[in-house]
Length: 117
Image 1 (cartoon, one colour):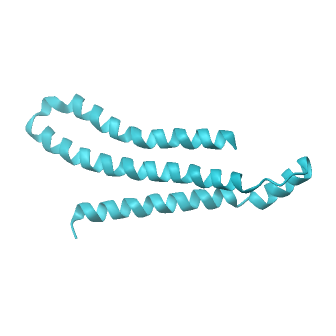
Image 2 (cartoon, rainbow, N blue to C red):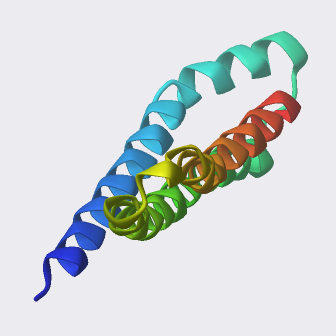
Image 3 (cartoon, rainbow, N blue to C red):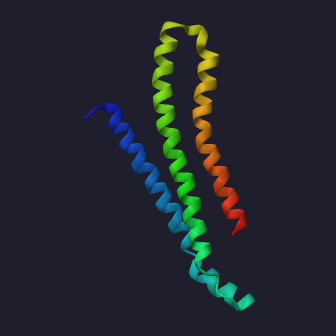
């Protein structure tokens, strides 16, 4: 197995672990919150709230996974190009920053989802 494939697998497992942990941490106080919401409003919170938490965790986790893959691919190519032409440093940093923006977009979507909950 190549080193690149091992790196991608480790990053994939790390993103999955973070997503699962975020989902568990968001759902852990759910029974207490459900009791408080039922006592305050007289209505059950419903399934939509839980699905919104799962959607937010998936948006963050999967976008981070995509950003990790993009930065790994672009970063390897950037190092090769930088070895041949050192004057490309500024352009290569911009390209790597654009690849990292994928994770930021996922985080923004998660914040928007959680703001609606």
